[in-house]
Each structure stands twice: as C-alpha cells, then as structure tokens.
Length: 534
Image (cartoon, rainbow, N blue to C red; front, top):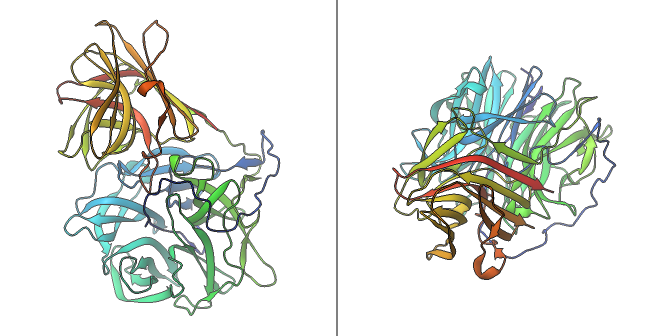
C-alpha cells in the first residue's frame, strides 16, 4: 500500500440550516489561478469529480487511487470512485449496497484506509436505536466487490463524526470531531485502536480544542520531517451561508501540543469557488502530495452541491509549513499529477438499459422509498414501496454536474400510475412531468400539498417522451411529445418555474425517473439522457 506514506487520510461532516437567499462568502475573495489550459495534456481543470461529492477521502494502493464521499440521505451508500491519475475518476459502485443494520440515516464522511492487505472504511451514520451519530467500520479485500460491516467503533457523547485513521510507530489511532452538539467547545479527539482496526482501546485524548469557536472538523494528518501536521476545516460547512476554509497546526509528537500556523487559513475562497474544505491527501509515485477536498461553485452553489476538487500541497523549505502550490484558493487549472496524462471531460450521462443491473450512477431516497426494478432489453420498469410521509413517489435519480442541463426519457407503457421525470430535493420538495392514462401532468410536492400545475390531454396509446430543462440553476421548463412528434411545452401559467426551494441543506436536488401510484402499476422507460452545460 501507499496511501500517503506517512500521511493519514481524512474526514468531516455537516452542520447547517437551509437559506434561500444568495449570500456572498464570509471570507475574503482571493484571486484564482487562471493559467491557460492545455487541452491535450499536462493540465487539468477543477472539479475532478463534478457534482455533489462532499467530504472526499482518497488513498493510493500501488498504482490505483480509491476515493469515496458523503452520500447523506441517498442510497446506495458512499459512492466508490477509482482512478489511475487523480484527475480521471470512474465510479465503481458503492461501499454499501444495503444499509448496515445498526445505522439509520446521515451517511457522512467515509474515511478510506489500507492496512495489512485489508481495505477499511470508517464512516459516520446515526444509530437507529437513539439517533446519535457514531462512527462505524467495515472491511474488504477488494473494495470494488463490497465491504463487510463490523458495526460501531466510536460511540462518544452526543456526536462522533469525521473519522480519520493513522498509523504511527506501529500503533493505529483514530481521530474524530466531538462535542458538536454539546455546549462545550468542539474538540478533535484521538484514541488508540486495536491492531485489527476494529475496536478502540485506551482513553481518548485531545489534539485540538476549539476555544475560538471556529467549528473545527474534517481532520487529516501528514507526518513529515519530524512534525505531525494536523489539517482541519473551520467555519460552516454547508449551504448558502457556508464559511469553510482549511487550516493546519503541527506538533513534534502525535499527542501534541499542537501549534497553529500563523498564516492560516491555507485554503480559502476565490471568485469561482467558495468554502473549500474537508479532504484528505494521497501521494503520487514521485512523492508529491495531493489534496482531494470539496468546494462549492460560486455560480451553481447548492444546486450542484460540494464538488470534488484537487490541489497539490508543497512545503516551505525554511519553515517547514505546508502551502498549496497554486495559491491559497482552489485552482481553476493546474499541472497534472502524472505527466503526459489527459483529463477526459464528460458533458452528460446516458442509460439505454441494455444491462440487467442498475448503472452505478443511480441513487434514491432510501429513508422513504424502496425501488422495485425490472429489466428487459433496452427497458427499465420502475415501481417502489414508499412510506406514509412520501407524497412524491419513487424517484430514481442522478447527481447533476452543472446548474444548467436538460434531461429526457421515453415512457413505454400506459396505466393509471404517473410516469415521467422528476427533479427531487427530498420527500417534501419535488417537481416533475409525467403521464397518467391519457393525461400529461405537471406536478409539484411541497411540505404543504401535492399540487398539479398544468395538464394536457393526449390520445391513448403509443410512446411519450418527456424533457425537462434547467437554466441557471433555478429556471425550469417542461416538455412532452409523441414518438415522432414535436415538443409541447407545459409550464405553470406559461412561466418559468423557480426551483430555489428544492435543494436540501447539505445536498443538491437530483434529476431522474419517477413513478407515483400502486406498486403493481410500474413505469417503463427507455433512452434516458442528461446533458450538462457548464
């Protein structure tokens, strides 16, 4: 393995409230790196994992990099990405296809770790028995074939989040954030864990204490040249009022005492990216350190969520303190980590349902729905079981990678269930267009009601195509047509729909396929396509 030589990988969480006003970053705007991009080789553009990918963790094992991030209230849990060069990432399933038995919700901040030929993931979830956030642990011999859960490893006070695991002098330690829901100051705590990585041992101790109320969290660590460098995020992580930034402290012993860097923060906002934070480090074979972290696009913000960013860490030869090579704000363009590699940018996703399994990029709200999916050649049939608070129905969704996009699909069958497209924030915030019987409906679900905005009558029989467009994050339009016909626009009172209320506080709203009705009246689809415009 080589996760980060003497590096130690990461963690974080989320604590905020939704606000539906555009608010500028709380930290000063820094000038961004606008170096020209070589579109053939040697330069990459951020983000390297576009779309909602908060709290990323990264390791390198041999020549392969693995990364995962927060999935929050969407299942399956914790998407797994694989790369050979840190800039081109391909999703290879999820850490958990099914929810671990002890866990209830809030799947945050997975921390990948490799030790004794075993892959570990330390992760946050709220416990079903008491809704307290705890840290669980799971293992795998091959991360692409799934993990075996071993239950809770850290149960401490009212909240334990943002795990990070490090080996020092043959001893394993776990670091986490504590007291986030208490009246006392937040602390970054640490504890020894057993050699198999599955249990705590000894008494927890303090690494850093948040006396200045900077809301420290998302710790990661690098040991270099006799110092332990403890990186962490300060400020509010999430939403329109976020104020995240990255800071560092160091000590000559793991237990401390730690000295804060006078030049903090070492990574903060610029005119294109805001609230950078919560990441971990990986080394290249050449020994360079790279930080995989998240940040919000200033333009798209909560509508694409916290996106996966990459920047190189460097070291001051005189003082030993770290700094980011391309400045103290996220790079727009930067030199590739591996020479003569080229970043391949995608502008969309398609699914023609030719496989008998669901493609890796699909997710759903696991708290309030359980999808029932059947495949035929070139066809997906969707229905699902929903709970009593779910007035939206079954939504099978993807992560948007831009604030401007369009998506479409074809409905293949006729019955009384509503079948079509959806833009899904959560169970109480959704809008879509679909067909029931011979009637096309434009509908919306809010916390107060389920409302039908507009309808159109069509002749029974034949396929119906649906399309939704999202322009500049919040302006939506809705269309339908017969197989060989022209697009018919169906909008509320012929106006653009304003979707500011759709995103949840810690994740973007998701476009996708929709079925609303009885479980025996499925919705059958073909030709799903989503196209992103930057």
